[in-house]
Image (cartoon, rainbow, N blue to C red; front, side, top):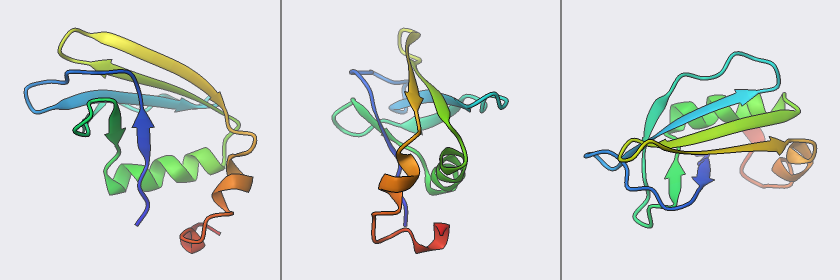
Length: 101
């Protein structure tokens, strides 16, 4: 089972301890805002398995990622852009990714 964790600065989250995650690969349409639970440290958010699989497949087929985390508590937004040039090389070094080859 694949896990995708997003590391960000401290977030309080909503009353259910969730933050909004939105991402965009290359020039594709952005994902919708989806609420995901904060980890206990409040600096990591894990995508659920359905979204993690979709995210990973899109990442492997893309060159760039724009990622935004919004804390509903105070509407603080953290946005970052990543080059995905080496993601395929590093991803396929892992032993648990046979279903993605």
